[in-house]
Amino acid sequence: MNVTQDLSIIELVANASLVVKLVLALLTLVSVMSWYYIFRKWFAIRDARTKTDKFERDFWSGGNLDTLYQSAVNDRHHTGALEHIFESGYREFTKLRGQRTLDPATIIDGVRRAMRATYQREIDDLEAHLSFLASVGSVSPYVGLFGTVWGIMHSFRGLASMVSATLAAVAPGIAEALVATAIGLFAAIPAVVAYNRFVHDADRLAVRFESFMEEFSNILQRQLK
Image (cartoon, rainbow, N blue to C red):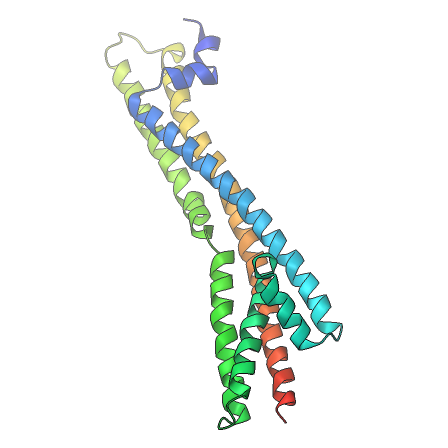
């Protein structure tokens, strides 16, 4: 028996039992999908942060609100989450301000509700697919462990037909089983790290959005006096 050849990764996977191969295929697929969502979410959050910074600079530079609103409406497909929140709030403010029967408190309450609805949609979009990363991070090690346990059981069943068990005979079976655990950890660790990072970034953006909504509501309330 050529132990070196049997213990190479390719040989271990090729000679693994059907169940272990299925586990490895599943974990590989999950890992590829996980990395796809990691890069996709990284670009999305970076883009959201960049557009938020730009809009905050434009807003607090003292520009005219009507001009900012028209810019947001005309270029809506290229604006960020914070600009969408501003757009929905100012649109509601303009509509309610034209109804002279409404008092200022009612108008501001309507503006806040409009911005809150848009805020929820934008946060849901930022947090999309994070649950998948969380599931990969929590489940993949156990799936890999299942493949390992099954592989070891398969290896020991093979030893039952042998007169004498040697390390050379049992090592390939145990090694192929441990590959499943390694692939499970390879899928889980990046998913957990990315999930924690993206949740932190999304929370920071959410705080900035909420702060803007409060400050913008105060600005509009002063305009009604």
